[in-house]
Length: 236
Image 1 (cartoon, helix red, strand yellow):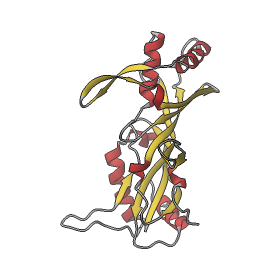
Image 2 (cartoon, rainbow, N blue to C red):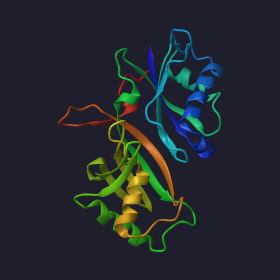
Image 3 (cartoon, one colour):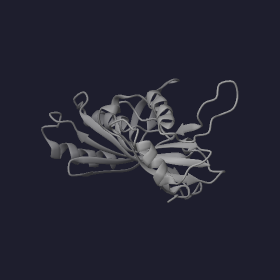
Image 4 (spheres, rainbow, N blue to C red):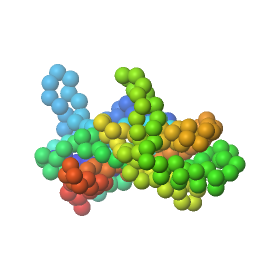
């Protein structure tokens, strides 16, 4: 059966890269004695995939991975098995059973929520001016910036990929497009804002946390963003 697992990544493990997180969970499955399914062939590997790689230095409350298991008692038991062997900073928070024909999480990713705060000592002298300017920045019809990729640089309009941006209690909340086609990082939005206001933020000024990852359960004309954990059958 297919299972979708949601986990949080907090504390020093934010400096552990995506490939090492993958290796970590492979070992955790063995330590937890999860009856995970392996691929066939000369070099069998655990059937496991992650929704969206998280950048090094970012924390998260909304990471997802899909696995296939031969057997399991229920989600509560599976969560306990994993959390009993988790390293500090990684916590399994949800478990969902999927239909056999369900698409994997990676192919579903359409958007993600982020919370951004200033690191201590990195706050602007004029916080109100900074946040007021951010509101004016997001109200533009177009937000142009040079985006770097493996194919070089190209000018892109970020406006259509910023689904929501607001400020509350000195925190910036963003809902941005995500996925293989239109992946927008919050760091790029803040870089575009710095360019617009003509003033660079201090290096490593921001703490960025991913809060949730969404799939699109609507159609081409009416997109509906749904948390990945709700796409599938929850097993009690």
